[in-house]
Image (cartoon, rainbow, N blue to C red; front, side):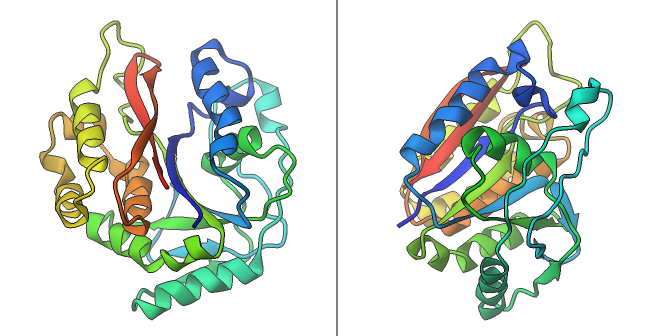
Length: 256
């Protein structure tokens, strides 16, 4: 059974540019595949794509979307020619439809930086096909958990499910002298390591009631990929990255 991982994708392109603030994260991403085995394909749920309905990339070789601004010129010449997989795209669509979740295919959409930044560090050879799945613009926690539940069968088919976001994402808090997000991160770790699936599900649905929840996520697009990952799981997660990131506390989680 393929694992599931939710990870921080870093600040824009900086993990790929050797920025000192991203060193620990870049090293984590580079070495992470050693614990993930050999996936047949990768399904990525990124914080940076929202649609009315779940939507999947359908291009043979999606281009890159440089969806960041204000960085040095080489940030806009990054190349990552990972192949898509129309077979996986249709399989994901089928899994969602079985659970009465309408899903669309976008044959023109490229990979945003929530995909190509971590994956270029993790799988630089681009030998594993990648498909991206959007978030749903309603931001319903339950909808995203149900999406994950619909995708469980993919794990038996060797597909790595990867949630790309940040467990803390408040742009105004980055770089402050005192570590931010500690209470929310502690709640998140305690919640996700539990093997009580139904109990954890209810807590994630009501995540806004967690300590410092809205401080950690004024807008929850960087958290919701985690809900999809959790939904695809059947037992508690392991904490595989636990560090300060630009003055904030962030974590990564692995479900085996």
